[in-house]
Image: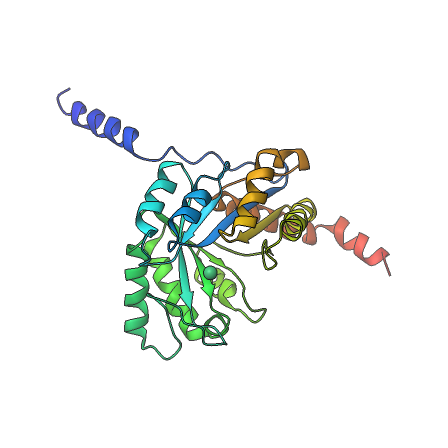
Length: 275
Ligand SMILES: [Zn+2]
């Protein structure tokens, strides 16, 4: 009996401090699903706080080594929001990336060491999404180095923010076997409430058509105001807002279902009859 007590004590302790277990992944036949990431968080405390406090399970992506990344990530985790590392990657226009930036001319050792330091700089990190990267995400070698490191953590997912149509990052992630998805809709390329609301509607439409939509926005006042107003009523549009990790699982189910359908004789006959 005396051997059991330490176990109970440990499980009580873990139960008291760890985040609640992830809810089961609903089947693909449930309502269409949307996940939202707010990225570029970490430099601005008040904007970051407002993003962390959004009234829904929105994920927050933190630029590494920024002044407020740690306390804001702690706060996000305490509020059961998913925390991502927002990973700065070289862009075609050579814009400065800030600390932790990854460049094409780096040797593999430096590249992977900096990436690991970036991951360690954000507490409670569950995933990585790309910041800029319109140059680096086109090249296989650095993307393999990147995904190789992510794979080594086993519990991290990868999101390609897809700042260029030529990105191969998602393909490399799937080849290596890392849980991954790409961004479907940017909320706020235009920082006006009406334009942002339209982009949210676009994401809702995509979710109705294709089961899922992954949305990325930024902690701009206009974006936060639209989300504060609309997130509490999102279910009225027939979609549910889920954490990013859950959206990846639902997306996987959807793609498997589409693949099975494409193999079924009925689907082939229907396709042929269109001729
Ligand atoms: Zn960014």
